[in-house]
Image 1 (spheres, rainbow, N blue to C red):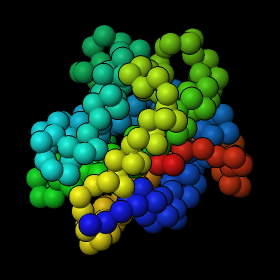
Image 2 (cartoon, rainbow, N blue to C red):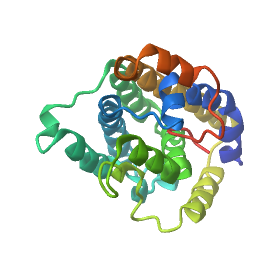
Image 3 (spheres, rainbow, N blue to C red):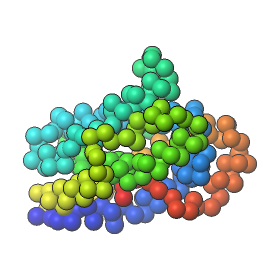
Length: 238
């Protein structure tokens, strides 16, 4: 039996975590430059990713390993639907489609679910722990950057069913540490988590064209030249 999977994931994905934070789109975001067209495209892509992840977690909820880290209170699909309605209007479903990077990400989640459901732990960890860790800070950046009214366009960052995020993160990490898995499986989960970081990076990289078009190449270059200080996770686990 393996233990300390949460620690292994944190240590084993540090490099990927840093690389994801250094994608130009994220550096601009963390410095307060949030452009609505590229941001709403990100929300659209995240909708397809989370929908796939949550469908597959639900489908495997009786699985001996998946059942241990399946927390429906983390689900983001409904929150993302609220945000898409805000950004695209009531007929948002007709306007959104997954980008090539989002399609590849969704396909990987489906493949993992069908062939090795325990690897869903990597996708759950990479997305949800990052959402819980940086959520409130990122919500504030998005609100200021796009002049959003409180409660509009930022439902993604609100976990209504989790009153104490710090306590929940401790519970979640403990659940990961208690998974009935061996060392080889733990290593495969860490590898999959690194792959998930890579897929998230591709989502961000796709958005840079829209962002540069909106803010100009000179500003983009000046914002991304140095690493953002005190950066926090947009999609990366704590």
